[in-house]
Length: 630
Ligand SMILES: Nc1ncnc2c1ncn2[C@@H]1O[C@H](COP(=O)(O)OP(=O)(O)OP(=O)(O)O)[C@@H](O)[C@H]1O
Ligand SMILES: [Mg+2]
Ligand SMILES: [Mg+2]
Image (cartoon, rainbow, N blue to C red; front, side, top):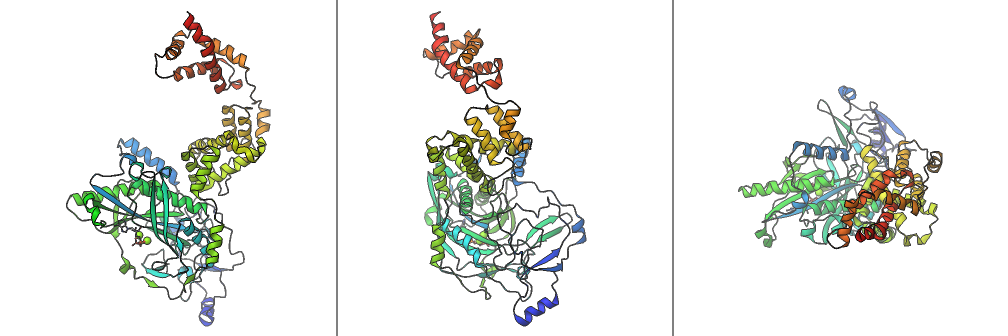
């Protein structure tokens, strides 16, 4: 426990006030930037420039300071490695898409999602909510349950909370209250968590999921509605990092951060729909800027409650006993853990056993859930109203203002991307999900810069080709970079190692057919690797003579004539199709001839699409009639 000066404590006890509202500033060993304490930069403004720091010492075990810090493997890499290991082991898992139901049984799932609110301060202290500072730098007296310290509700935390509730179609409650939920763990200094349970600030919401959101299509049809029982505000716990030798490092920067817990009704019937639900909640929270980051960066965690019952028991309306799998940190983990737990419960019941109410765990890559402890109930938690906190009163004016100033919600955005720019719903969704929502912002930045370069006005929507081009590159070509180099360095406002202006420069030349796609890809790599300085795309094309001087139609035709010579057998296949003797157009043979043209001609002056067009026309008009006439 941190030491606090007796003068400070004495002042508090005598006057009832903390003269220094600043934070405890603990001296800890220097942590390398790759240490797990460091979280991604958030958009938050720094708080507390005026806050004075209280110097204290923190008892950190000596061996902890000396212990090497385990390198952190990004979640995406962990998932990839896990898939590779499974492939290498030769074990084939049943595809999730084919494993949504079990004949004779019905699955029920209810989900609790914990999301970190996007605020500058903690829920009950003015300490900064910050993720990228050194550990234990933002800890107020109350956060570590210093005797005599009291909660000071920070009203600004209501802004993202109410926005979230509105995005989830909830009724915001004019009066809500805080309760204490007791349990002992080292990451919670007070021995209880302040939460809302009996009187949450929002109730009775719902989310509509469509087929495009990835619900189990055969079972749930095109649309399913999931009810939200309530949304409550509560405190986060301290962050524990395990070190070798049974040592744990604690970072109290996270303790007391405001969370919302979103609790659904037990209305989800399929594993894929559960994952789609969590994905949609993440998108909604990000769209209204309520949440710090998504699952990948640890800003959102899901607990799934799973039960099964026999199909013949459905009519009784009674649900099976639930077990709860805590702390899932990817959409895939949500789906996989539900499938594993459903199958475990069915096996128990089929063997004549009973399902026990339990809290279970799930680790990445596993195929079964494991028991952690018996499920706590309301009695175990000894819920009681927090006597130090008055009711929270939320005025209609605040709700009205936040409702009126909410941004575009995901469904409307997908419709816009599909309708206005011609993206497929799948690509639109991928763009919106990647990089915790920053990739779509990057796309808009690229599109703005591209339209400016191409001189397109507001009617740019009438021609969608440039937007589709930008979307494809922001999704697929940028995606290829991440396969080879792990990090794009994407910031929340949509900038990365490939500045949007530079990608727009590459794409404007490609759109105008001034460079080939191959040159464009090389340029993208050049910018990414830093070989091309910012703003230097066009000069590089000049300097390296990369401009595209395309062959004329006549030159393409001459090349085509050259490559079909001696290819009568191939031409015969086209003739068979023309005469109705083959079902499918021999596209493979066409591409074979195009490939030959590309090899024979000067690659820098050729566009495969033009080569294909001219070749196809000459087949119709020249080669096939000649073959027929023979
Ligand atoms: N029989 C059931 N089968 C599946 N899900 C259920 C069942 N009964 C309740 N649930 C779901 O379990 C969740 C219960 O969450 P809630 O936060 O109310 O309680 P808790 O899990 O005891 O609390 P906590 O985990 O926060 O300590 C809800 O999402 C609810 O829909
Ligand atoms: Mg709960
Ligand atoms: Mg729970």
